[in-house]
Length: 480
Image 1: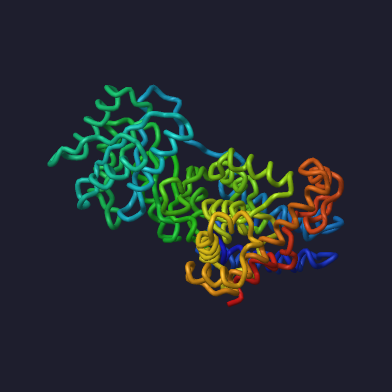
Image 2 (image 1 turned 90 degrees about the vertical axis):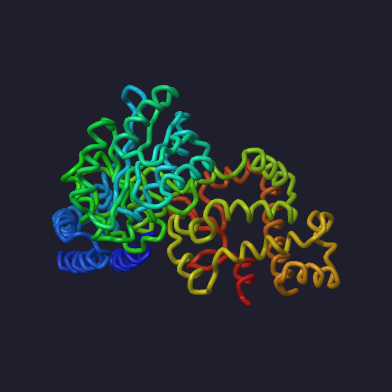
């Protein structure tokens, strides 16, 4: 997400960091470039003006320009202001501190993703917060809208209000509130109707529903890809219904970031969640500090760790650690690692979350690397026998031909995979020689480890990724 804006800002910051001393003219020139980058990202003009003025005022101060690292100081100021623009340090979660059932009303235009987002929120409330939720569709205009929510409810394991044909939205809202009380639901999610554009009929319906349901949260769902239009929609809704927050959908495809950067300033309401994909678990609380870090190429290691904790089974991780300590690493272990990478979002997602990995991500894009390489490697391993996966040395020329034919690849691809496995297995043995994981931890704590960056606060680098290169084994696999 925000790739275009991130690249533009990254080039500006690289030039600032590369200069030993900065003058006021240098800072103002950089601010002009940042202003252009934000405008091209479709950020609202008043927001751009306020942001650039605030950063310039702080960055041209003598404390900054006379500091040992003025370039780094300016980058920090931009980072702090960007975080403030996006909502500050606090993460605005759902307000559930009300008498149950707490009513959450979803509003927005047609096509913004309200129904899917309603199901995502229901799943999140159930699995992350242990809440019993009931979902109700009040959309009687769009064909099969109510049926769509019912199907999604089955998929996420959250109850939905039975459909009564011909019932109007306000009556459905009353029935939903009663059903939620009878079922002892903690939360009632109301998925309201949308329109192709804001009109008086839509707003009258929203006001009527809010009147009978008394929602604690009124969340506006907007498509971040619509940029400035999303901001205009938010302004229209905030003037008519008591919005408490915003949910931005399709953030994973938003290369510009205009909607996210403008929304808080324009509406005065916090961005509470971001939709990051089509899957029903692809929604995350909006953390301004983390998003600012991604935009500025500083990574988001916290989100990466959280995603790993959610997707990697504890018993699998424990089993792998035990094998690593013994210096063991066969093709079954490699396959497990590849599948975990896929479930965590793939190569591009992982690279985007690691600090200092913008060049590596660009190298991946330039060389045509995408997540198909993970599927190809999985297919190669899947075409092997159980014995071959446990003992790769059994793979002679004849067996390699069979594996290549079975996986729809070439023998050279099989060889590249085996080479990658050998390098990883060798690394595991090195870890064992250093005293296992305790020794590895001591190396990290005592000044760094070869290929993983030194001490002194330097950003960690992955082996083989210095200067934006891919790991040797993965690099070879992509040369076809």
